[in-house]
Image (cartoon, rainbow, N blue to C red):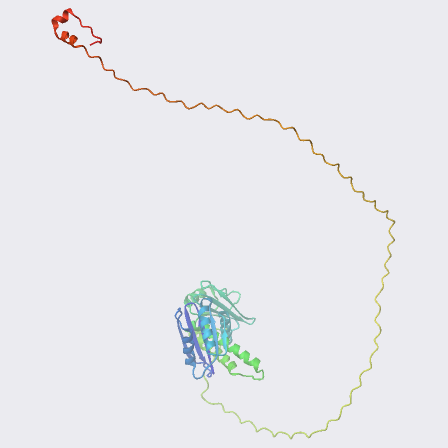
Length: 391
C-alpha cells in the first residue's frame, strides 16, 4: 500500500491523481477528469479508482471539494465507507492550497511563495513565508492582493481561467508569474499531499519510536512530485525563482553504485552480572512531629458603644373617626300628569271629478207638411213654414 489518491470535486468537474511513492520521481500512476452532472455514479467511480490501484492498494485518500459539489462529495464519501476504505481524509480547498503552497516553497527553495488556485466557482490564494502558511478564498473575478506577501514567485494553478489570471497578474506583480501544464490537477495534488501528511502524523502519534514510516516517506515523495509539477515548468520558461543562480535539483540517481565500507563485526556481549543478594532494608523511622506555634488570635477591635437613645414618648392611641350620619333619601316627588298629544286631522284624499261624456241630441225632423210646402216655391212665398229649428 504505497499509493496516494487525491480527488477534487468542483461545480463543473471531478479530477483525480494517483501518485506512486516507491520511486524518487514520484511517478503518476493515473490521472483523469470528467464533467460533473447528476448522472454520475459515485460507487462506480470509487470502484474504478480503487481498481487502478490494485493489487498494491491505496494507503491514503484525500478528498477536497467546493461548496457547489457537496452532494457529490457526500456520495463519494459514503461509497468509500461502504467499501471500508481506511485513511480517508477530508481536505478543504483552503487546506489543499496551503499544503500545495508549503510543498512548492520547500521544493523551490523560496522563503515567500504565493499560490493562486483558480476554479470556476471559487478561488483560493495561499502564501507561504517564514511566519507560516495562510490561505483565503476569493471571488473568481477578483485578483489577489500580493503586496502584503511580497512573494519571490507567484504560481497560478487550477481548472478555471488560468491564462487570464496569469496575464492580469503579470501586469501588477513584481515577481515572476508561472503556471504548469497540469494546472487543473492542483487541488487533487494538494489533497493527496495533505492526506499523506495527516496519516503520517497519526502514525507518528501511534508509534513515537519509529523515525521513518512509509507514509512519512510518501509525504516527502509527494513534495518531489511538486518539483516535477511546477519547478520544471519554471525552468523551461527560463525564470529564476531565487535571487542567486543555483542548479536545479536533480531527480535522477547516479548510475555508479556507491561502495560502502563493511561495518566491523559487533563486539561480543559481556556476561550477565552475578546475582547480588539484596540486604533487607530497615524501616525508616518516622520523623518526630514538629510542634507548630499556635496561630495568633485574630485582632479584636474595640468598637465604641453607641449611647442609649433618649426616652421616646408613647405613641397616641388611635381614635377612629366618627361614622357618617345615616343617609336619608329625599321624599319622592308627586307624579305630574302629562296629557296625551292631540291627534292630527288628516283630510281624506280628494275624489277626482268625473266629467260625463257629451250627449248628442239629434235635431227634430221637420214635419211632412213643412217639407212639402218647402218644395213648392209658389206656396212658399205666401207661407213661411214655422220650423222649430233653424235650417
